[in-house]
Image 1 (spheres, rainbow, N blue to C red):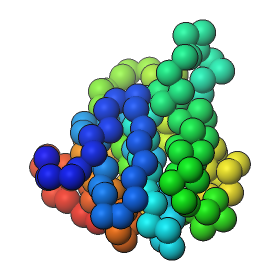
Image 2 (image 1 turned 180 degrees about the horizontal axis):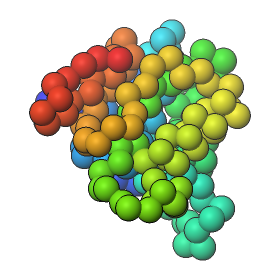
Image 3 (image 1 turned 135 degrees about the vertical axis):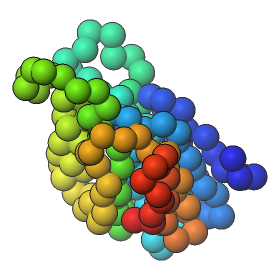
Length: 162
């Protein structure tokens, strides 16, 4: 990991100001929700595991769910100087890591996480300007507060900036 890089664990979130950077490792079906204010150069990253806190009885970790993590991340970013009206989002992850013979939507957690992330960002009026979701492989991501770069790294599928 690069010096000054803040590690965001699974079911975790964090925010930073430039020149800071955030990373989360091993996004499979999980989603890395990256939010950025291009003027204040405040960036935030959440590593969500599940789509909706309301469907789980033990939901005390707000960072675990798309709905609660995104709201908390925006709150933390505003405390650092971000303006809600300028926020832009990028999402990555949401892979289907295992093959299932069933077409049951409950087994497609990556797809459900991506849909929930899109829905909560829309509800919060935060446009998604780029995404790299789905398929069958994991991702590690890095978000840079200085310019909003979202670096997606994969094993066997290269890397790209969105």
